[in-house]
Length: 152
Image (cartoon, rainbow, N blue to C red; front, side):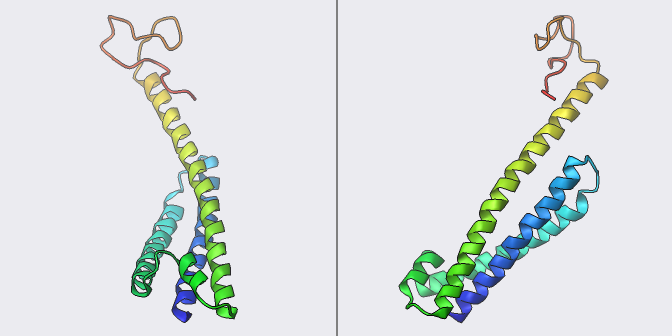
């Protein structure tokens, strides 16, 4: 049970740290700052550590013959260690849910940034379009893309 708590504690700490890092990244992206390298480096490092922890967890679960920590803990007798492990498991699940929401937010910000770049590239490339917004490119144009393809 000590090994279970050790693995779950490390996992809970790493999973609780990731949302903080994503908050930092989201703030930087929303302010249109180009300084995203440092938060991304920290996120990558934490994800690597979390991957190592996940590997140890899989090895432990294979050794004890259980498909998940929840099932393993439910098979254990009620005691303080089991309660601690269950709280750590819940804390990890809560952090993962928060992280899932933040990843969705980052994806949206990246899509908006990509659309903004596409829009400006269309302007710089002088992509021609007919009078109607979103209409097909003119027939005498060599470009196949339409101007203002991206919704900004």
